[in-house]
Image (tube, rainbow, N blue to C red):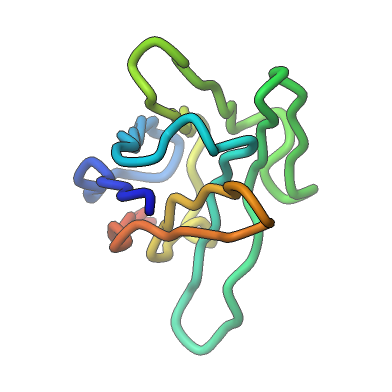
Length: 116
């Protein structure tokens, strides 16, 4: 079992920045990839960014060049640095990780609101 605890999101103005963090605990040695997803009202949950244990990253086209995912293996924490935020980035953001046997675990979600 893996537990994921996300930092609080917040309210930010268009063009602003926000950093989310997600701390993992439990069977952390089984984690091989971590990711951030988001879900806006009335929309499906979508992948925002993904990072492997080796540090390879990929991003949704909508956030490329603005968001950066990183991980600190010593702290068992993954971060999402969000810059140049837009109103369409407003969503509940979820931390997730893939562990052994392709088991996925999810955080509780944190609200990010970008005002225009």
